[in-house]
View (cartoon, rainbow, N blue to C red):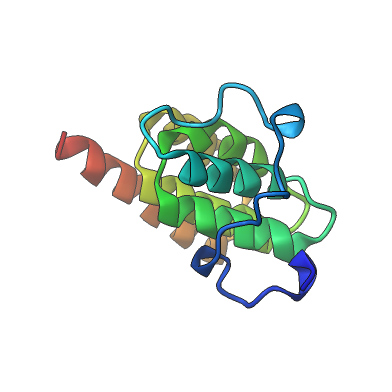
Length: 136
């Protein structure tokens, strides 16, 4: 089955061992604390953030939010400026799930640029980050 034909829940599967090689990994993104297969999964979804298909980018942002690894924060921040509003909002949600303070200023900037409905989602992400920071 091709990636585009994959089930709607991208979190349920780990990419095949042939999907990623050392040659096409994004340096510095994988967390050293994760087992190798989880690092490969993390790298897979980080790479999907730049896929030509907006549905794949949306799924990648959701998956990275569910994984919750801070190594995904910088690529997710880059994805906040995606052309597709659904990708931007899912990315904001994902950053809220991770709860890293590096996302606060970019989310505040996006908040000022979006419509009222989108602002509500971004505000929730900002609140989630603040809540997670208060628990540390």
